[in-house]
Length: 181
Image (cartoon, rainbow, N blue to C red; front, side):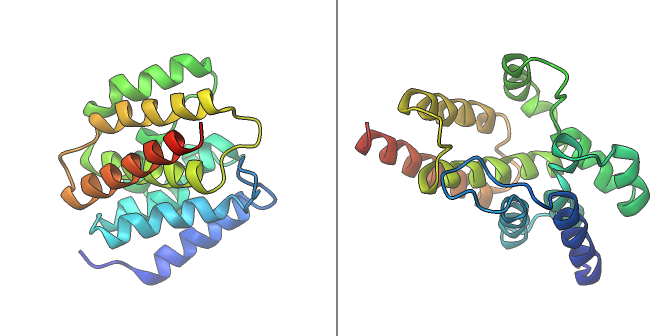
């Protein structure tokens, strides 16, 4: 599986434009595009398929911007759009319903979508340690980490390297929270 550098960079530029002006919830308020770049880098460094890497760059565009699934299909093809669709929450549903669906639906996702979701959780756990959301108290951060672990349980088994990285990141997040009660 050869990664098409031009296509990957085109997706990165697309994501940067789509997320322009958005920042992460953390205290550092880093540009949102940093998150999708990290997700794609995690996928690339762990041998994920090229379509999953491109989807990693685009995975939050449908949830958090004006980009539609049809826009992604037209720009990057049905395979990438399908992976993004599998990894996207339905923001019309209540938050607790979306969170429960992520746990219950994780084992049913395609291998590419499982890898994307796992890389996304790794990036989010790293952010929880390095720059947690400003308005999240300790209990909410603990709840998020526990929930991420429940989602990841249904995503594992496709990519041993990503599985191991998640476990290391998860344990580090738990240790960090234990030290900062």
